[in-house]
Length: 69
Image 1 (spheres, rainbow, N blue to C red):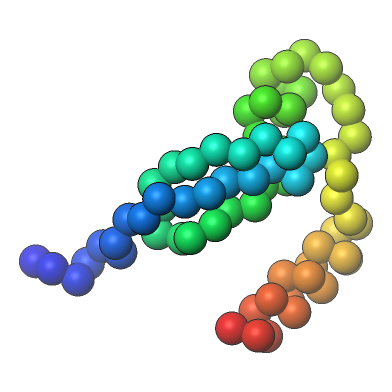
Image 2 (cartoon, rainbow, N blue to C red):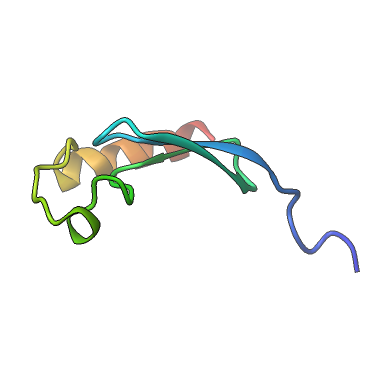
């Protein structure tokens, strides 16, 4: 059957915390992560503060993004 799965494209992935960028295949054109494997404390053993807003700020950002879609 056709039409069940989306087409996969080469996707640029960028981490907001460390700035790491890499490419993967995904249904989206671009992905932005809060934390990646290069800066996640479970992988690095170093704890540091992630650069992100509060829960309310992130919710409002998602809500604004959804309203424009």
